[in-house]
Image (cartoon, rainbow, N blue to C red; front, side):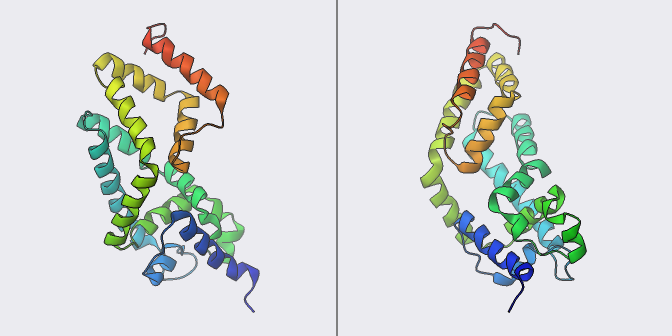
Length: 217
């Protein structure tokens, strides 16, 4: 009978697929993506290299399609903000990757499953394992289910990017802690966040202050 330690990554991998809403057809690649180099020779570092390029292209295409009014500099800065270790680490936590990773006993005891760099690398590796056609279908299904978030973002872009002055104020607003927290929650859950009413109230008055020029950008 397999031990609890050895069966934990199996259960964790099933949870990852459940949360993604996608079953990986190439099972060997899926398992490799979840395998750290400390576990064995068939690890995820080459997949990580490919997944980094896949992620950069996918995010670039999404930003290009959704923010037609933004110039190259703005798009590059937004992409850099999204494609970074901190963001990928948070994605890994949402997917439950700490319970799905295959690590050596020493790495596991040392807290490897909670190390941001290891989790971020695993997210990139996962992106290199999917069939392109299946992933495209999953993306279309995702947009049908959660396109309202991007619709709201489009309205915000149209308003705040209508002039250089408004854009400067929008960048200032985006540095706000409440805005960053609610934006991330909406991004991770793919729905508008309603559970923090006071944060919404604070953001409303901060936005109003920017609109009427009571605060500097």
